[in-house]
Image (cartoon, rainbow, N blue to C red; front, top):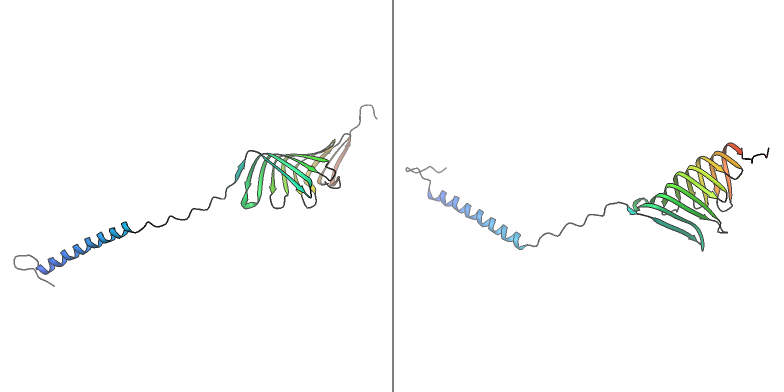
Length: 196
């Protein structure tokens, strides 16, 4: 330990040491500043992956053609494409299903979902299926492309020119043009006035 001199000042060697350390610190800061100014800036961070959002469409029209035959045409007033789920969510849906003779079955629904890989459809909300003078009404229907069939697992009402049938779990074979109602509730025959 260095003791102060009689006049109270520090020894000169200690003052030089403090001054030398100060100079070294200033030189170090100047060197660091010069090095950072001359080195290139770090590369920008990689761009963030695009958000997994939806592609919104004001309207949509899809047609499926297989072996030269038109299978169905789908139109929607609005659509949202969700790529991560392979789905298109639809609003205001109108579909035309075609058989080999190109006869048409018409379908309307408030909303629906198309699976872009399987081509399956799920249709919900006031679903109406029309073929000739027969109309089917339900709240949920599915199109099974591998069977070429429409399935309505909930309550259904089938109305023809002279009959009204209610039930549950309807299977519509589009290729063979037939309906299978698995649970029957009620059949009403509609007769003309004076027929009875």
